Figure 1 (cartoon, helix red, strand yellow):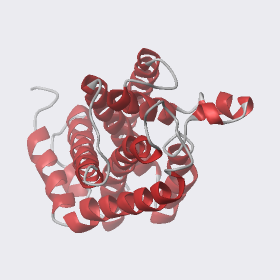
Figure 2 (tube, one colour):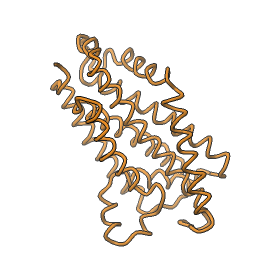
Figure 3 (cartoon, rainbow, N blue to C red):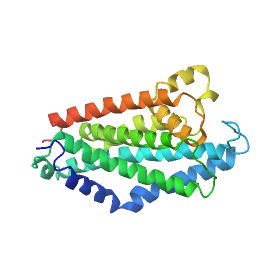
Length: 254
């Protein structure tokens, strides 16, 4: 039997789960990103220019899009798993002959779909305020997929580890949010003091944002190939951890 047998029905369940509350899972993040754009763009557009010929509002849009992709990909898999554990309906999936590969593909696949759906929504809405063009569209697609996949896998790890909503909130508030906001969404790290530039280079989220932004402007703080190597390695490591935890049944059975 294929290691991915049964992935389809579980993936469909996960897709329907977030789509049925689409206003909360898709529309709300789009509105939040739009508010960031309006506030920061209004205040800083005439005072900050990161890349030559690129206004601050234009610079901000790719960061907001990628931030939305990452946060929602993480939220999808982590919230689904912790809810299933707490309500007790996870047992109905555990009794099926699904392999850990099928679990991983379904949960991460649904996370990628939600992350990309929200990111596309943010891009379409913000594009009505700021003219954008894709200088190197291949990088946009590569980093969007890798970033969503990595955060979907990280959401699986968090969902398996957490036993209650408080622990999940702590994981998101003290790990995901700081790493996202300190990744260069709202600024270029070249504007930081040397010590904070060094710290930023330890944050894999920075390379996702920077590589994704490269696709829009053809300019970035570091080489997109370096970003690809780091993000790809991070994706493999997090995915390997998630698969190992799923295979062992870590905290999945009472």
